[in-house]
Image (cartoon, rainbow, N blue to C red; front, side, top):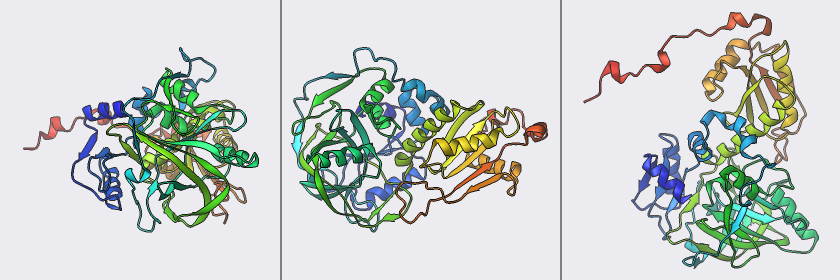
Amino acid sequence: MRAYLERLQQQGQVHVIDREVDPKFELSAVTDKVQRTDNKVVLFNRVKGTQFPVLTNIYGSRERLAQILGIKPGDFSRQWTKLTNLGTKVEGGYTRTVPPPSDLIDCKMSDLPLITYCEKDVGPYFTAAVFYAKEPETGVGNLSFHRSMVVSDKELRCRLAPRHHLTLYHEKAEKMGKHLECVMMFGPPPELFLAAAAPVPYDVDEVEVAAQLRGAPIEMRPCKWVDLMVPASTEMVIEGRFLPNERRPEGPFGEFMGYYVGVGNNAVFEVLGVSARPGGLFHSILSGSSEEVLSLELSIAANIFQRVNAVLPGIVDVTCNPFAFQTIVKIRQQYEGHARQVLLAVMGAELTWAKSVIVVDEDVDIYDIQDVVWAVLTRARPDQDTILIPGVPSFYRDPHKDHWGRIAVDACAPFARRHEYERKRVPGAREVKLEEYLGKRT
């Protein structure tokens, strides 16, 4: 991640802030302001109460994520299958074992930046840690994200969502009467961060996915306090274990949907040790920001693209815009009713996130929500082209059924009259360079 940050700095994509900031509210306020303006990466060099700099928003744009993978920003869904081709081998294997760096620093959890993000958060949280654990019986590794409430130097309380693989690992270990060893990584290689958000089958090790994305083995070092390996370049690592049959109060916390999640009894993580690289960069994510939801949205879209493309023709692209709960599909219409079949296929392929589905023609920019809304308003009849499906579960963490039901909109031009919906164009408008006409400001 450090090498990637240096590349972004050379490209002028990083704000470096040397003024001291308070980790309680001020740091997240500045992050929020940047994300709402130029959306650059932010590096806070002086954070009150810690020696470690804080890095945020490094994965907060589609362009930056595409740069990691060496693809175009709008080609993520189509390229994802090829990039994560688990049927091929990475030359030299998926991992390469190296010794721990000789200059690793042992520290306490309270030495790390303890950031409180929102007004009614109970206290500091870790939001960007990539968790890594192994399936208790098979040893298959899992990478995932979970919020963690800081209680003390020895205890974190983690929200493990239902049906997540780490949750299933923890529950299986409990039935065996065992702790589940786990590490929390801050600033692992960028490919590992992306792999942690990927929809991967239960029996696939996500470090393998990271190696596929990189096209080279991941150098892994042994941990000091648990029997696991981590990427040697990881900035900071918290090593520990989940306690069996133990749940303690966690929350409230301002979560990704923009609301506070109240107090609940959640998993207890016993901290056994913390290590950091010299000058280690602490990665922080403002919950609900593009840095949190974009990687999720990209992985959902890629998963839907793969599944729907396998059963229906003419699928051009898929995105989740402007939020993970909405799927937008661009198609090249093949026959009457094609868009309706795509709508149903999407809802069958994605049972959790596809709460709203819109299908548009290939002349619509699905990454521009204004263009998508234009298509809905000019090509869809509300009484005929909207499908409501009541009483269907969606988001898995929904005890009050607030997210039940689905809505789908066919925003494609009528198949038989497509020629009547040709969009007007102004030749050369997109290529105009205004500075050549208006002159430079003095």
